[in-house]
Length: 346
Image 1 (tube, rainbow, N blue to C red):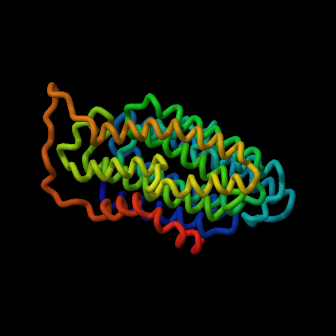
Image 2: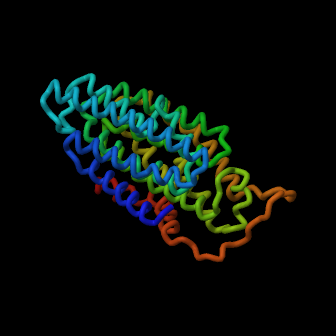
Image 3: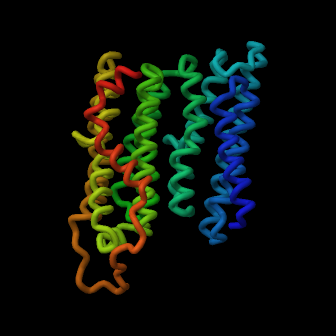
């Protein structure tokens, strides 16, 4: 990619995200969303591969549809109440349309079909942006309008997302698709509690971003895209692969790792809200995700490659370890003992 194009796209991406996060007016929020969508397109299509072009078109069409629904929702609300403020969403139809628009942007079930395909057609770093940074603006809008949204609808979307995110990840061999379904499941957990405890939902999202970033950076370091290459990546950096195993187990939500904290707190909060049935369903459905995370961890470190490999195995790295990845990996696995401090701060 041309350096000037890369610089302009990166700055536009940061600007669009910042505008949406900091805005209180629906038109400014919509402008920021459109700017972010247009800025990420060069990154998705930069390889000029047919799969990348297909992913770009799918992403553009879905995001344009979601932005149109969001604009229509805000205009309907302004028509009935005279308010353009994001927090003053009072019209029932507007609330429903906004929920659909945000679900499309986040990739929640049943509007998830585009997300795995777009991630599969992108590079690992672009997939990282799509899974983390591009989720910030819709999550912010969801947080600002939680008091106006339908709790039953959000709970249904959350349970469906956790179920499908775990179920569809079971038979995946492509790591980008697998992480896409992982993202759908984690955002389902966040959506389940966002009405009852927005701060907890934000904490869940932050920890998801932290852990997912670590996984993507580790996979990008070893240039691993599917399970078969993950089996032989231990020869490149044994230490990195051992760390990747711990981060994957943290993403699965196993104690005493960081990923256990949001699941534990969400189940506790739902039980306090007399939603023990929902908490039980989510806890059972998380076992589906646990299976494919364990399979990934098993492939990354415990499985030795077969003797008859038909490609050259790359031996140890010559470049030093990525300091950013090391810091993120430490945070992704060791934050749980600090949970009383985090809860006190929240």
